[in-house]
Image 1 (cartoon, rainbow, N blue to C red):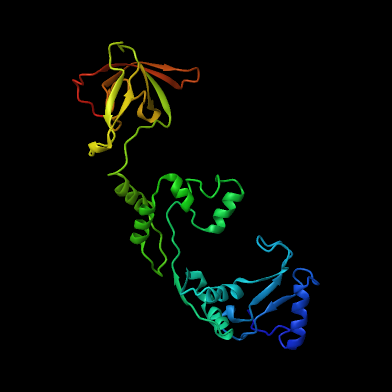
Image 2 (cartoon, rainbow, N blue to C red):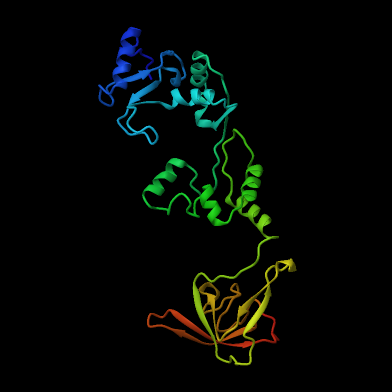
Length: 311
């Protein structure tokens, strides 16, 4: 910025009023005129160098429709709205710190109540997009399925993902408010969620990439259901019944055709113990035309005589 006065800065007030009325009446095209606040073009703070107060925009307002074609800028409206609505503290992130001076100038010049401004560091969380501007692009381009996509750390997204208000509040208390730039690890949020949910939620099982396991020695006399506790430490949460059949499913990551000493899941040379069920041992591996494993034939042992490395 060169701090040079604009050519129209000394224009008479009466002419400025006339032009502003013409702007309001829609006589001028977008970009031809703006109303600027007469502050101090020599100020070291660029936000004090006659910022724009009103500009022409022929865009319908969501509430007033086409009633207006001039709209106030952020610098013009933010402080005055806070004052009119009796906001005690105007809280924003550090990038707005430079605008505090113009905020104070306009409210004092207008003779209105001056709220206290408080800037703090924005919240950054590892592996997550927190910027509303960037999130808007992701939503509009269909990269995510709306503002409540569970992959997003929006309130709607967190609700769908299972985060409770208590978890979010505890996370905010743990992070605190600071002016120092920071990057908070997502594991903090996850650990708080685990601590809050672990004592109260029932347990369940899920297979993301199912691989069929068939018990070749399955007997019709075997139990049709297995009763399990809904919570390993709280009997008051009741029990559930798991159906027991000849076929069951494990995750593909839980089976390999070749064993190694660091792999403690199911292999042709290594059995595993099923949660709430018997030990199983590979008898045969069935593959498709592409060589992909499609089914594992196993035997099983309800007595669990052998202690398995994997459970």
